[in-house]
Image (cartoon, rainbow, N blue to C red; front, side, top):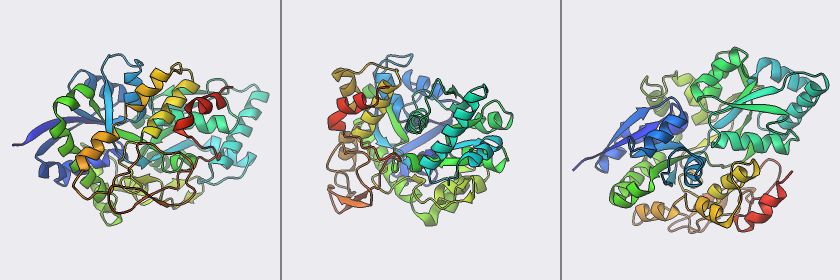
Length: 404
């Protein structure tokens, strides 16, 4: 019997695992007919998932956490039983701003610290001259984009919300907003940074992987009640998505994957602007900069829903005033990511799964073998650009250390 599942997604390269699961037959092999529905905004995806129009969804990693903390319009509990890859975002700014940054301080795209120092000098100069604050776009308040942009700005000596202004825009509108001068920069997932570069609107100045290596981005989101009632189906889906992630992660498949993603009903962009995120040849301020860590759909346990990732996002929600810190809120955030379901789904398949549910983030400076259910599993590097470390067992101290 074939089970039909409706899944919302946005036209982003990190929807690749869902798209390949349908187009390459991984979902069909598990008895699932995957109906992928393209949406224009994350608010649409969130709301349609909450009211039952979607059974599952491509989702921003902080979105289930925000829902469970009561920060969204509907009282629907969401969980993330699987991640959909690591990395995949970048920060793009206008040609005028990048020229001013480079005049102030030399930097390369893989040097988040140098780019942050250059932007800080521009901001300070603008304040001294009485200029209007710079505006940067992000896709949603509860997005990795918002929190990683804020983290980078804060660690670079720039105060989000007072030194600059952060505005919300759908991913597909970012490049046009930059080209028209409505915003000065944006943090978004691919291919919309490469689209901005290809259109001549701006240049990429930093990647997500240069701010926090091996960092979380999108997840598979499902309603908790649906998961409990359809656990067998969910397990089958996770197996299909894992095999899809394996296929997406193979360099020999990147050209075919880019062609699939380029179809009008998916990303609707030329393969030439999709491929750079897959093979790491992302175009930055100084031209092509090989960055094999830019987007990882499979390696480094890229599909495992680490609860330490959930808690780091929660720490940033507290830091920027979205929610008060309590033990109950922290536990709610932690339980929004469900490695137990992931582990159960892949049991008996021979897939190496981490033995732990959390890890110290930023502790691995090189690729390291870690304990797994079978074989070896390699993680890292996973460092933050400012050298900070996030230990989920010391959450209170971490939150205190980030207070103004």
